[in-house]
Length: 89
Image (cartoon, rainbow, N blue to C red; front, side, top):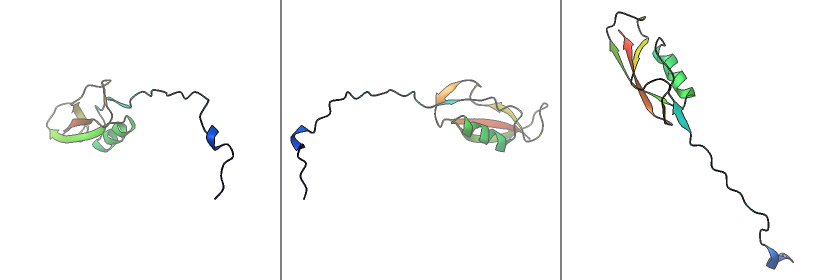
């Protein structure tokens, strides 16, 4: 076993700085007009998750696209928050 000749002098003399990092957040995008698959991808990029997807009859929009979302666009939520969507039947 080798011994360090400076074993008694093993103290840190340089200051240590701790940086505070910003918490990761989910910036909710606008999903209206997107398909369910595309909405899920856009939400993943924004650090959110797709929640429940329900279908409803509507006059406007194409079939299978998002006509309503549970969280307002541009709102900031904790990362991983679920956003429910309503798709046109």
